[in-house]
Image (cartoon, rainbow, N blue to C red; front, side):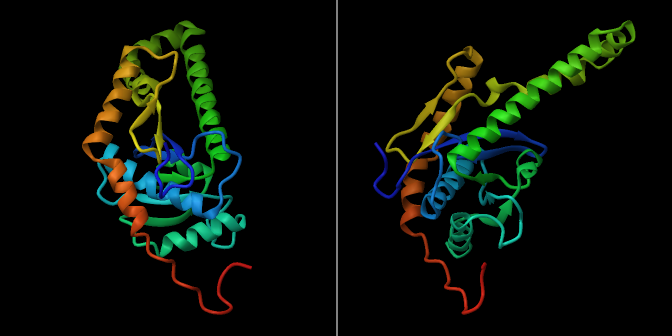
Amino acid sequence: RTLDSIDRPAIAALWPTMRGQSAVLHAGANISADADQLVDFAVMGQAFARAVLGLEKPSLGILNVGEEDQKGHEDVREAAHILRGAGLPIEFSGFVEGDDISAGTVDVVVTDGFTGNVALKTAEGAAKLVITFLRNALTRSLLGKIGGMFAAGALGALRRKLDPRASNGGVFLGLNGVVVKSHGGTDALGFASALDMAIDMVKADVIAKIVADRARLAPAPVPAAGVGAS
């Protein structure tokens, strides 16, 4: 059941980045999200990041087609305006672009479910492509095989970094209980990762944090006349 203060639940996914991990939400299949729903996602995402990533004050950005304040459609601009004056325990970074996700520019990336799901599936496909190219390069020739032997340790570290089992499962946020949806084809390690995530969320009392932060959400400051996106 959805929390009374949340209009729509969201699926959060952990994303490997150059700086460690980031949380991306919504990663579901909803076609769109209005400004209030994007703000809800931000409230839930920062609570999730504090619990699972251990961050006291996570940085957060809204996924957009550019970093400038006037870029994007009305809903993302309005959500950004609300979050700038919200008083949440976050460092709001404004808008971020698609390449900022893997760069780890922010700890939490907020977007609608359609965009988030497409971005997630695209990244998974790109990772498989890179691994396939690398495997082919290291097995095609004798020189490649010798190089692979010398690089075995580094390649093992890369494989562990990109192993989807390490961050298995999508987390449903905005419900009145902790729900982690594990990938159906995963193994014992993947299920263990999903259980660890659920335990971290229960210990950190994520649901209570979401309710409290949504309730205390401060109204955004009203911009002066003539100021703002047109």
